[in-house]
Image (cartoon, rainbow, N blue to C red; front, side):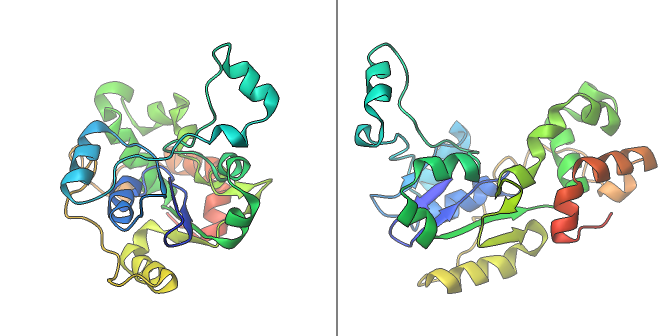
Length: 229
């Protein structure tokens, strides 16, 4: 995630929505006081090579902890901190209310069938799970449920939930909203792009049963953004 005081925005990073690539692009526009969480080592190197800022200010200042929490730290409890895929609900608890209320908050969502297939392949595909149903029933698919990332008590708390499929148009809208000098563009480096071997579209892979399983699990995302198989 990123909290930019320089540009007054909060970016919540959902899974399998090009979030790392977008973080690399955004971090190049951030200032020295902005919050930037860490990413995978290979991606971190690419971020540095592309002019992005490394992780910074992820730990919450001691002054923001209660006396009891500071006392517990003496006995080994870690300081509160932001992390890569932190949810909006968790982030809000760590952010000063004026910042949370006033900054522009956004994230991305993706067609759930496409997202599930992408993660299935990234996690080993047929070699590990046999088929998509095997991946779904393994329980790992729960990590992809984006709705819980950008809602609090079932209410969307982002100013915009953009579609992964409309990336270029969304980046232009973000750039205009935040007044960037140059339109935001994704880096040529594609984070984690070498992990997917099977490039067939989901419509050629899913069985009818698998299709319906995803529709049930991601019903909230589908209703919110009007996704179709």
